[in-house]
Length: 637
Ligand SMILES: [Zn+2]
Ligand SMILES: [Zn+2]
Image (cartoon, rainbow, N blue to C red):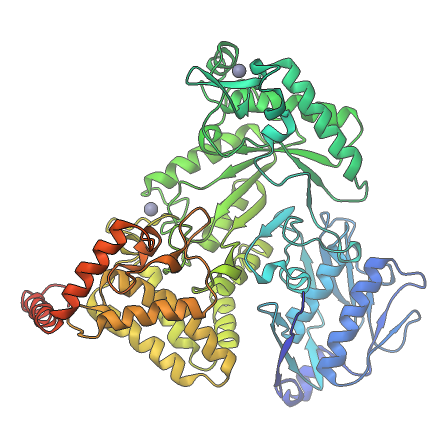
């Protein structure tokens, strides 16, 4: 993949202007310093030292040397350091100032490298906001307090998201993402937490349901009185043996004894056609009357086989998803079983632990029940609108709190599913959301407001405060009329704003564009603004209001801009091609997927739309009258 690294440089005069007294109390690191490594460094130590060297050379404008014997002032790395990490959890690190020098050490396969990146962020102000935007202030020297002693232990063993920039190695290292499915980090970077075999919905493949449908129909799920290849029968002992054999084959082919953890996914296929045979039903009745009972029973036996075969660092992953979301009773997952709880039904306007949101209270009950019987819960969470990806998805207010909720409920791994098809539809706030997610997974208690502000300034330029103000309003008015927000909502239910508020937000976008200094900033603003225009067009607000005689042209312009942005879809797969829509001027954008060129419905809509357009002056006058009437009636003008 071709990457263009755009380094944003800003001369930082702060440190050189510090009073001498302060400099004497702290440690002043400058171009005379060296990076100290052991005589025979590990690949981790070499990687961390090279990273420090490269970035510090850029900061100071002087070549920094990596040495194996101590010079006067040094940053010691790994075994060359005197930072004691004996009490630090696996993949954690310690950055400690000792006698005027700096010592960085880490544990596990990625702690040291993470420590080096933390040093660069904390003391050099280096921020990797996207795969193309890194902010790095230059300076003659940097100040490190003499009493520095930072200890970091990972909040989660697995952190993953599928937005665009997080797939980049450098971005992942700087922002603490380690999941294998979307970034195969090299060994010297600590490697990734990998799913061996498939990432999800692997059950039928592992049980070979398709190939046994004629010879052994009893291996298949009995659903609604018929055998189906959609799921296997989980209490059939032969099915268990087939799945065991396939899982052990995957383990044998991909096992890495040095990895911190490897995962094999044994997860139900994406449908509700679970087995209802007498044996399955009886087992479930005896264990809380829930389908997760047979699932855990099945997966436990596979996990035992994996353990018996000596694969101590391999965990078996299963879902608590849709029909398996509720925890069973009288049976508990083994220690080497991961239960991945999915939040697909949740509301994203309210935090998960908001007791007034019924959907979320339900999820919290399940999370609490699972946490009583499972020491290794992972979460599969959702962070975009899959049905209307172009519209504003105002979940910014819950991202950090929800990740805190996961951590506080003993969740050990988090996958934040987002717009994984962003290269086919990028018209919202993908890069911002990705950065927020990464930073919160790295530290759920980070100062997210300052992280957001830093990102906005780097990405949107000098007018960023306008975009912050718009985002704050989106967040405040997120959700339908009851304030709830789900991942398939139409624009109308995603956000509630009055005409006055719409006018205010229009001004924010206009101001942001006017202040842009570079082509990139302007392009970023215009791309994100599409989501705002898309939302307005659906609600007939702003330039799409009935009072604007040019409203149909505005909608055509919106369509053209979405096409020009490179969007080949406006929703997750499985929908019609929106570019087939022949009545874009007359249908709300949320419905563009519903009208194809060769459909009667589309032709009807086009016919009546054109007819209405001919009577535009009259309609506009009526629309204008309607708006005045609303204002007089003191409604939401
Ligand atoms: Zn069955
Ligand atoms: Zn809610």
